[in-house]
Image (cartoon, rainbow, N blue to C red; front, side, top):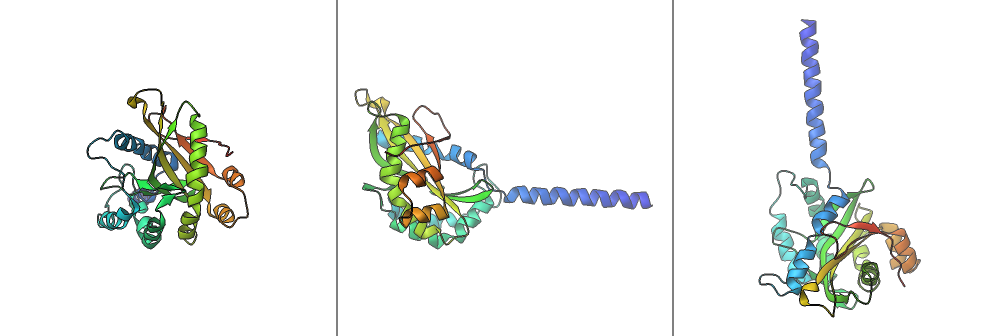
Length: 254
């Protein structure tokens, strides 16, 4: 009898452990590199817009609040392959922060800010990075096209960071630094083309900057330079020769 009771206790313990592990796994956020891989397909949408394909267009920030409220109504019951239930609830908890942020996000530097996301997507993601939660503003685009004959992929990415991303950090910081998440960043997609080649040489590229909140605050408040910010940040790029995904790089701002 004691043996049977012991077996039952072991079975119950194992069952509870497996259930707890399953619940824990369910609550995990997607890792940053996996998230970046899924977000790299925004390049395809940019190229479709750049080639004037029917049904593809750049959205402006005015579209965000309506799309966001509609997206929030479709609460996921189970983890998807890319987006997790936990991610949905974190984004929902910071609803006002994101609405205010996008309301201010009219421009990236001197260029109009555009967005390339579908009806069932949001240009906001939460991923796990360095064992911390990380907010990323994604699917952001500019309509600039860089000449591949004049600069390398890294030079193009560095130029986008300096001209368009860094001037936008004060908007991101002002709206996110009071959250409980201490890493945040932005992914910007842009065009590249051989200006002496055919129109088929047009391809999109993306650059991603992730920064810790206190470092971003020092930059926004004028305590550190843009080069010091870049050195303390995490930068990833997806260039025209990559099929998908991002790679971590070190870039220099001139």
